[in-house]
Image 1 (tube, rainbow, N blue to C red):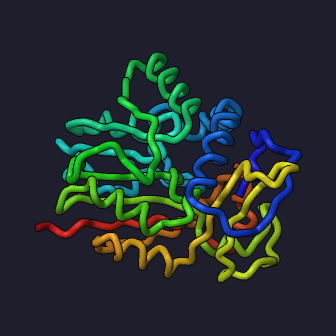
Image 2: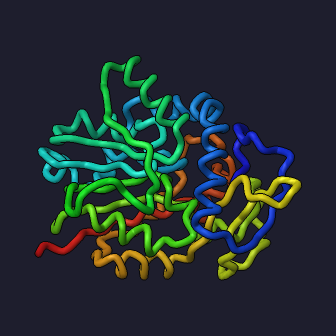
Length: 277
């Protein structure tokens, strides 16, 4: 939920209501274009220019190997959805993959990807695309991944995952991280341990302007919703990772921090495979 210091819409009014896919995409494209500069300034060092950080808890793919490690990545074709400035994709480019591409809804985020490409000399192809309609052929990739990209902002998670599975080859892996559904019970204060909202209230969190137009939308799905969406996409769930807050990490990122992170999970990472034909 939008509580980041980079939030460009401090004047908006929050609401819990239904929000459609087109409304969500329109609002979030504009929001991320407006927030990208501050977001990268605030979080870029934590994410690293070429690092695969799954979540505010700092879980690193180099250690977690949720994508399968070198054995699966070497020679693989990889897609990162909701890539932002392509930090994760840039790390993947150094892991012996055959190719990696990132897509994102925000043009400004992709401009930051180009900036970091120039600064690091590691260039990642990217495309401006809607995660619900990927501009790739069926079975084009061996691995599809997303670290808090796109899925938290889409009301129809099942349809999105079906689209992602479409571009995944048989035997391929799909992994994504999202806000842990239980975190929706709590306000965005990272030290507040009082549940204020029903876990089963699936209405979206919507920030509206004074005319009632959505300027930011974040959707809520329960753990069961995510599991059913994975299964409905024809995927086999291999793991559900709930990273614990690590000792020594005192960094607060919006509603994530050591106080609440030491009691309830803030992130859920789903790891699934497409069965071999």
